Length: 266
Image (cartoon, rainbow, N blue to C red; front, top):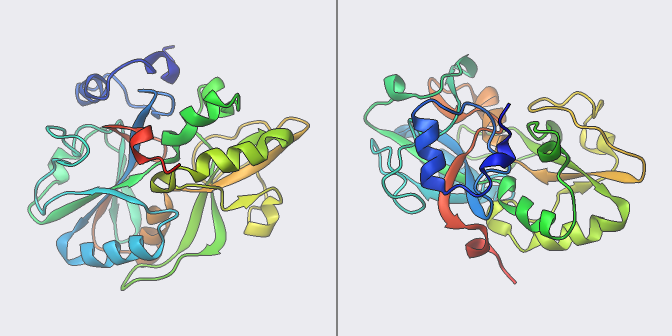
């Protein structure tokens, strides 16, 4: 089977075209190395302002990269010519807080007045970690990154509230400080970890059973390190139960044109 990392050298436009043609419906970690990836939230216009405020109040899990015009699926800032209804491998469609479909495109669900938000993704800083000789276990195993719902409460905004979701990567104890420093340079794609070690302290009872994504082994001498995750809006949608929403399926990101380094702060 072709691995995600086999597409590391591909351009974002080529990967988006492959996805649009239905030739890839799996997670995107490790694809288009050096380029930003984004989480997706699509909401009706009457809920978009609440989400904009929610994202501003919770910048760690919800750093905004781009916002589309109402009714226009083109993310003009980070991928001119792309289409958020076709260019992600898999989506989730929500009605009243329940996921009713996980299609490979959402053309039939698109309508006037919908607003798309693209949020920074931790896949974007994984290249910097790999360059620092910090292995990404989920990429090595060709799995989706493990993600967990925590007991960390987001600041509410309007109709939206809920817990923070985090992604986890096992890091050698000797390299945890390096991982913190490297990812801290990327605040637009979640930045430094929100928690290190002790999963139970943030409400994770069984680290071998993630709420989203795939479990990965934690080897002796490694510490679980947790970053804020762009799946957080899906937890808010499950809590707020809006009439309608669309998101990416966890791990199935929008691959954008800008380079990771464009968002770095040194």
